[in-house]
Length: 140
Image (tube, rainbow, N blue to C red):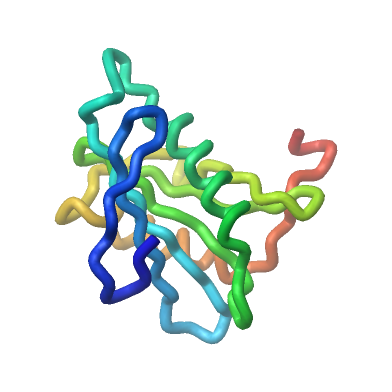
C-alpha cells in the first residue's frame, strides 16, 4: 500500500491486478480514503468487481488498522472507468466494507479516472466525518 505521494505497487487478488493508495484528507476529523484501481483483465465475463472490491477492502482493513489520529475510513474503488465508494462500518471490532449510496446511486463515472463527481465525493467525505455506527441487528 502506498501513501500519498508514493507510487502504488501492483498486487493481485484472485488473479486480478490492483493498486492501492491511502490518502489522509486535510481535516481535523482523521478521515482516511483508500483509492483502489482494479484492472478489468482477470475478472472474466460478468466481471463481479464490486464483491471482489468488498473482500479486498475488508482484508486490507483487517491487516492495516486505523492509526493514531485516524477516526474513519472509506475507499474509492475504480474499475473500467466506473467508481464505487465504500465505508468501513466496524462490527464487533472487525472492519465491514459497506457500499456508499448518494441519491439512490451506488456507482458513478470515474472523473479523470480517479474519483466520482465532486458532489458525490463531498457527500462521501461528509459521511465519513460522522462517527461510525457499525452494523446493528436491524441493519444485518
